[in-house]
Image (cartoon, rainbow, N blue to C red):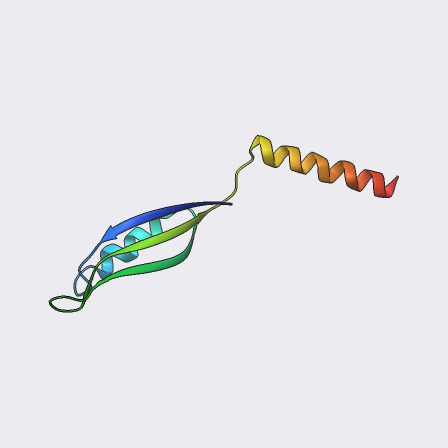
Length: 78
């Protein structure tokens, strides 16, 4: 499984629409959103990290694993 982490600068009071638009444009599934909370001088969030799980694509490793599974299945059926 592959993941991508995005850093999204925001002002919590006015960037809700920008965040919503960004999330809807992502290709994968949002796993979590981690806020960076700044405690001094007043508590606020200056950016969030968004962890996106990417949909798996066919890779040589996945193809190899798939062929192993099929050969194991054929041995069991055989």
